[in-house]
Image 1: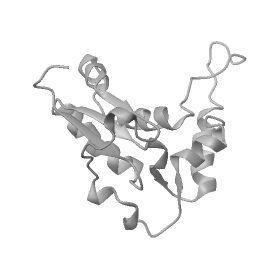
Image 2: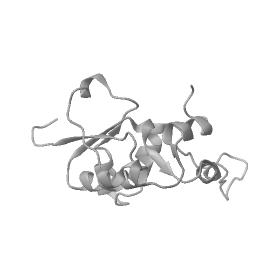
Image 3: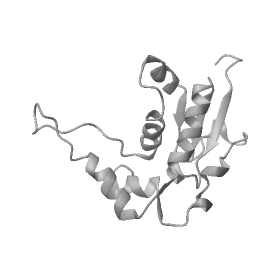
Length: 148
């Protein structure tokens, strides 16, 4: 790592995934490295059944050339669900791929990041929600990505 790269550590605990991802995408576009810790504790708003149905629907997609093959690979574990959400908010070109490399996500807090200052986004806090929600860990467990 060069000395000019600024590293931002984001704590995803009780943060709404979509809102948090927009902030992370903006940080990445501004040239910062972003580490997301506690990725499994991020929140997806909506009733549990609707969220699960939406994600499960992605697994039923088949290809036109060979409908008997498996469809497109979709994320099942919390790290990849969070990273995929952020990736969808980045530019769809070479620059977007380069920016995406500056994103790291972790389940829990790794030892090398313990004790460092972490940021949270106020407008992405779960206290804004009035309805139901599901955590990324719970969604991952239901999709078969997290074994516990």
